[in-house]
Length: 114
Image (cartoon, rainbow, N blue to C red):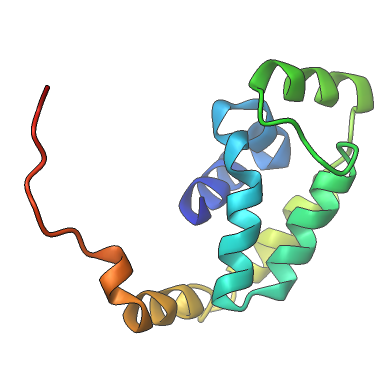
């Protein structure tokens, strides 16, 4: 969710994030940025959700309808996120979180094709 949120917003802004299927991860992105200690990004995601009625649908078609109906302007939020990402240490909190919780990011086993 962390990765998809940043990738989509960097590619086409919050409009693209919510319009694409990846918009389904918005609540998980919110949790991810809370967990790593990035309250500035949490605020941006919360505000973007508010501009879509406070609870963007997890159903893509419904969410796309919300975008059409509410026609939110995310330009300021896009800009705010881009400014945060310019900070040289932007990813350090995520990397530290992974280091501290490394067992949650490690898979030991075999993946079998079915």
